[in-house]
Image (cartoon, rainbow, N blue to C red):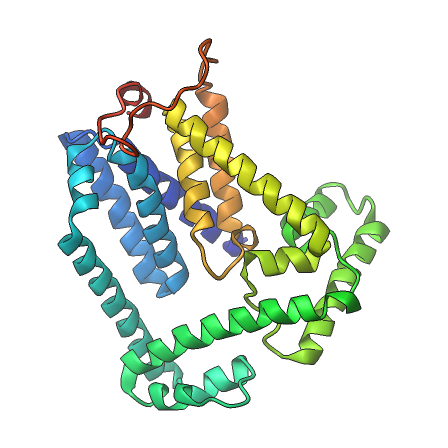
Length: 325
């Protein structure tokens, strides 16, 4: 229950932060709204001490600014201010190093943690970096995560012929678990066989490396669940639908369209992990679906022509000012 509550809180904060940016109108009300959600975001990041929500806040802000700068001179100025962006990036790196320092002090972290957790056979530069203080350990962590992600994706490709694809159990297990409780065990045997198949596949990975079931990129996980052919088709369909969503937000920049497009853009920028395995992403989609139902945009009688927005000319999105507010 606490896991679900945490996901709902993070989703609400990220959706609220996106809303406060894409609906910014250079007035006092917009400023207060933005300060509230950026404060909640900072409070959540500080309270968890985790890199995951921090990355979520960064990517959410970048995606939301794509639309926010179309109707806000202030957002547009920020997006073009290289010195400010560089300063913010530096502050974020310093924050993550401080978090690493705190964890090193209270958890007694050393290079052995990375070696054991990621099953590193030859640490090489990782050992040396981890001994250079918090900054070095943070750098060693980034290198290890990236290398492990690449290796795990390759392992899935190499071992694909030795497993039976589970056809999406990993993607759907949140809903499968909930469905079993709601239906009182309906289709219990069929779901159990589905779950066992996914478990057997994971055990095959664990026999190769203790860390092989960890991050393998979005497409590495899709291949393991659906195989090469279905992965190709699903990837094509997913990007095609994403393009339609982004185009619709440009053509009809109302609140729901811009929110959905911002979420999709931010999730596609994730380099290492599969966003569908994060419960807060499911909650974000649910919140946006509720907004769609509450504020259904009227169907346009004219063909969809992308206006000269911030993506092209930097001019304000006139139709959005009343809808996004």
